[in-house]
Length: 95
Image 1: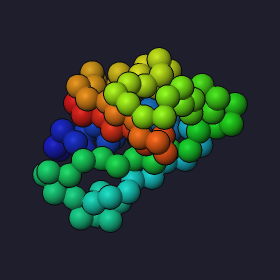
Image 2: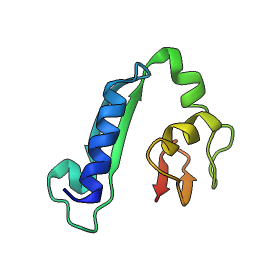
Image 3: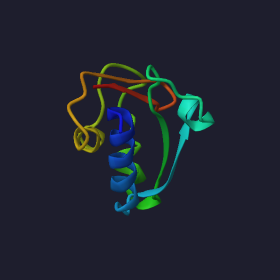
Image 4: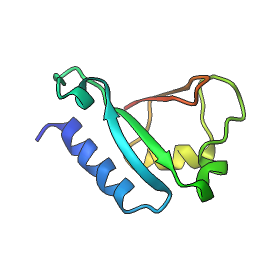
């Protein structure tokens, strides 16, 4: 199993066992079943309302950073080497 598939399995298991997350799905090439060895993971996650204030907080409109709560979530799967949050609260992480 490739590293990306192992990471995806780990993320899936973690989200499934965490009450903060209601649903998740893949977009992009993985979501279409067209992934290649160069593909990244485009994952959309629905946050339970009780946790949305902290996990969906946007203290700045865009920039290289994230909240402590989201960083702790990301670090479960490795140390991010690049993190950028866009206006629509999309997060880009590079390991």
